[in-house]
Length: 289
Image 1: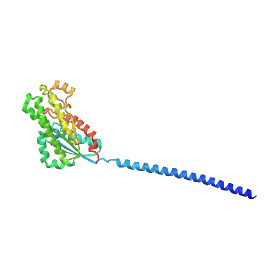
Image 2: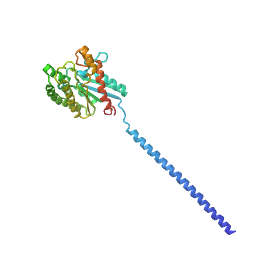
Image 3: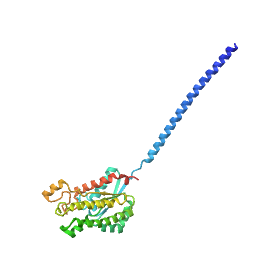
Image 4: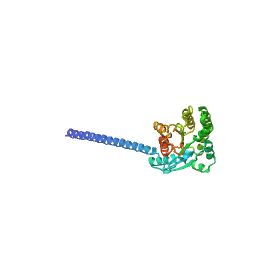
């Protein structure tokens, strides 16, 4: 009887140990899985927080400051639009990026690079406007070339243009450096000169090549100034369509009927597209805080 009782007692203890061990293992595994789940959730939360921190907000408003000559002023544009590329560029930024846009237009018809440098140095309105700019555009060089053309006339040679280009490049470097003095962060978009004389100066030796070299030199100057981009418009108004129209009318359909030098409304549309392509490709430089 005692042996039987002892055996029953022993069996009961073994069963209890097995049950207790199983339950302990179950609770241990369950707790381990719960801990791992909590750790995974915590890691995901940390990743989400990091991702959220990387989101850079857009600016609510953008200011464009345009400095230059008659192309910036918008000479030749239709009265219905007005303002040349500056008006069109402002509208494009506003529509495409859903931000408020304001612009200051400091374009003065007839200004050479030297005159623009003087205005940047002494014009208080420019001094107040430039530091607030998110986008800066510059047109310069066309009048420098025109002065040379008036001086040399039809005797103009590639060497004449090349010599003037070297002097112009020095002035261009000063001009861009002066702008950077007042604004060290906003991207500068330097718009090159175009050849309005492809029809009228067909007999000038190597004139086309000279314009290309002038633009290449200007691009090199732009590359030497931080956060400055060159917009090449040299061949913008030289197309097969232009050649065909020129044979019939003797004029360029993208240039003003008044002076055959400045762009007309369509010409400014085309110029704006070229400028905006560069502006759009560098959004990170001006759109975000």
